[in-house]
Image (cartoon, rainbow, N blue to C red; front, side):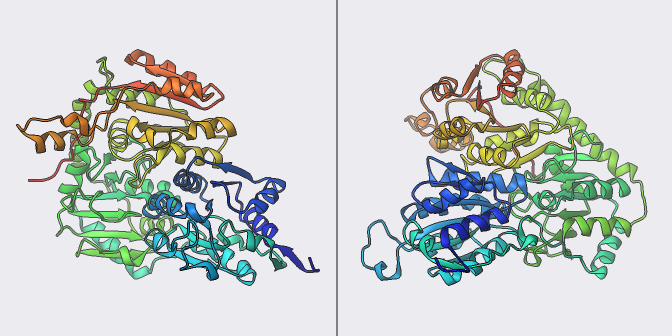
Length: 558
């Protein structure tokens, strides 16, 4: 090697170190020479059992740390890795994906295991580039981190020369290794909204008699929870959240009305439906958070505080646009508003919340066997440490926890899949790698846990000590009503479409060297969770619930 250059392997390793990466998640074989340098630099190399799990781990790592997560795969694994980036893309999570690609001379000639990668990554990344020469490496690797965290965060993809990247690793790359400090975490910049937009929004809030805030996942990304609560308290405005925004306001705060949309508490939908102004903060206005654009009605006036100008007014025509960082925008809006009380509207919201809580409390306190998920959520919420990080799957897991589990401390965090069943367990492992000092708890069902059960071995091998709570009803419960409605009176076996054979996940966990506890009675839940949290090794708490139990249906106006 000549003076003033460095091997491509070392260049990649030192760049990752410079950007604050502590773990990389991958399936062999990719960048093996780089892996040796990563070990020397103190970066942990986590080999997973599937590329999709590696992507989910990098996603969980990114959401928990506010730093880019890194996942990798060789050429033949690129398709699986791309599939795993869907949730990061939908969840606005900055993941840097690296794959190998056979040289141009081998393309379009039936090269072994080779397909075109660009079409696979196009729908699930905000930036993609072919990195085919050593001269590109210093620029494109930095650009990947820049793209991942700027604007709306999201996944990026670099396709490296050689099916396992070896060609780039062996190349000579000029020094120095440059790290752009601003792009080591997100948000790197906080755009300030225009004064005229703040004034317009303030006038609308002052004029409204029944305003409500809907806080989304962008509040978490911006770190704006305290500002949102301050605005709500200054103007006596009830606060709903999207599922991804859960935790913005504590569930027992007098202005909290719950999660809105189609994975929702009835009272939240009722409050938003009755509002004469909806203030969306860091939230899109897609079908899930609006219950199919019925909550609120499409003619409802809206203030939307959003980083991405393309999102403002996308679905609601009467939108006042406030484009900028949520933390700065909400603080500036609060300063523009005088303190105000709104007892009639607040009392109405609290009345709806109280009616909902009275209705669900018998279910949350139920001693029924099989155990009701409502009781499981109550017990988990009461035993979770003050600094716990809860990682939740989609589907019924999201509905149960969104509606039945109460976050009691501002230092607790709630991360939820953006739509991919099976995401939560690998994502929880990535989150624990990012925040080893925090208790990380995964909540999933048996349908979700089956996806990546093999990663229990990964957790044990790397001593990633998460607690995984499996709501095990031996089936896919969410679709049961629809399946039976379709069958009607026709003969057949509808259970074949949603039932699983009974398997003890606790025993499987023990066989893999983890702690496994099976819970069959409600009074066993709390001691099992406490044991798992104190175990000092990966733990699975398998709670046997009933397949017949239905999660709350979303309320919508007639």
